[in-house]
Image (cartoon, rainbow, N blue to C red):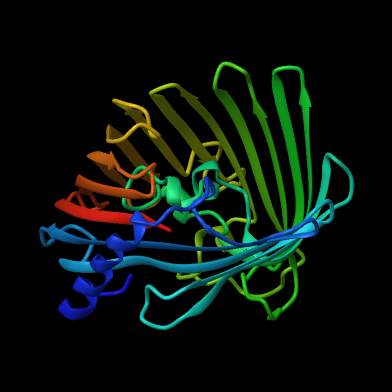
Length: 335
């Protein structure tokens, strides 16, 4: 996360004015639309101010958490290409590079550098996040990586089922370093009543590189299983998720859990919408205790979801028992 100067901090807030220009429903500007090709350009910015106590893990003061520019090209009937850059750190870097080929009406082949879909919370679009940051659970799973994925989706009456099977680089880099692969699988069933069930699986195989204690969590545990249930119907939103490493270190215990709930007053496409949210994160360190985080906040949706001011409070307890507090005021802009 970038700690900006006051000038750059205020400059990003000026981007709010840009949201008054019309955009189509995917929150991007369509610059080309003919019989063979559609071309969209989009942007996403998120900035705010954090007031924190000494024992909270966040930094105090202004921050820029997202500053993204993306380009999407849809070749009608064939597939699409998606390219996205991130500049929140102060320097532009590639975030996503994805090519999708439509093999049949229900089968797609994806290749490039993109999200590994182990966690349900992690694959939620950044423009649809209900909290300033994702769950602590999402920080334990594989993130973006170079890979190839086969995706199937079919509707059975009122039920939609999807299956994703992929092979990725275990280190997340575009250029492979070392051996081994990260095998990924995800199944998701969405019911007509608004309930969706997710099962994610990640398995790191064939890697002989020594794993250090400072390495990412998923490199220290060869296999991860993620289970989630999401209910979203009308104004109601509920999310429950658990991450389980099926190895001897945890002996069947979960490594992390995440629960969240929200309720919206008003319709997104009919002016101002108010949404109170609450959430709880828990991380089981097995050796050294556990980590907790409780969050509550208020999101305002303006201009058909494209402008989202928010005020949030966070309570944290680290493994040593130290209590931290944080208040975050931020705004997210989707162009």
